[in-house]
Amino acid sequence: MDSLRDEGFEELEEGLEISEQNTKVYRRDPHCSDLLVFPPNFSMYFKESEWVGTGQLVPQDKSSCLAPQTVHLLLGIDQDVIHVNVGTGMTTAHIASLLRHRSPHSHIWAFEPEDAERTRKAARNLEFLGAKNTRIIPDHFLNSDPEDSKFRGVRVIMITANCSKSAITSPVQFIVSEGEDMQILGELSQADSNLARVRELTYEHETLLKHALKCEHSYIIMGLIFRTDFTTGHGNECSNRLL
Image (tube, rainbow, N blue to C red; front, side):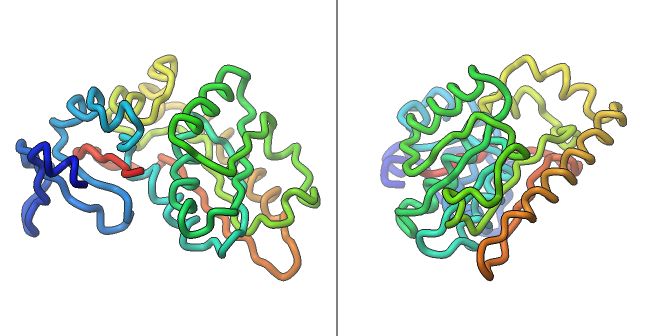
């Protein structure tokens, strides 16, 4: 925060809309303790900044930050997490960041079934952002054994569900902020019209949830956090997460 103030950033006073500003102001997000919101015209400014280059700030959409915050609140001290569908690793790193001080001995078991290159990219991002106690499992969550002893400490399962991404109003901005591959641009442009894909994803979500519900240990009830980008909305702010 001090370095932002040194660069002339000031906290925006209450009652003013951040998306209408064009000066160096920011607002603390009311729902995510480590999220700062900036005017939209500062997206490129931060992308090229030392803060992002060194991992002090992580540009991410707020929708990607809500589920990790919920995991953080549900998890007890030194309890573990399963994260299904790691993707770029940015959300997994966010969970690790939130747990770093509150529960430093918690482990995150991160499932990423896509391909070797995607797994390597996630591993690089986790290392760059200093994520600790995180292990990527290069396999589909459905192939896991709920009774495996290494999952004995798991109390929360977070599923980052594959979805149609029909809520994304700015595909290019989404790809840049989430570190996704530009190859998915075509998929994003057709997200609203592909009903067959939506049905396929609905079945996948149901299957994942049923498998997650098998992971019961002792008397503990699992917390299932399910994040998608199905709903419609408008992105008009630049958000950066503090590490």
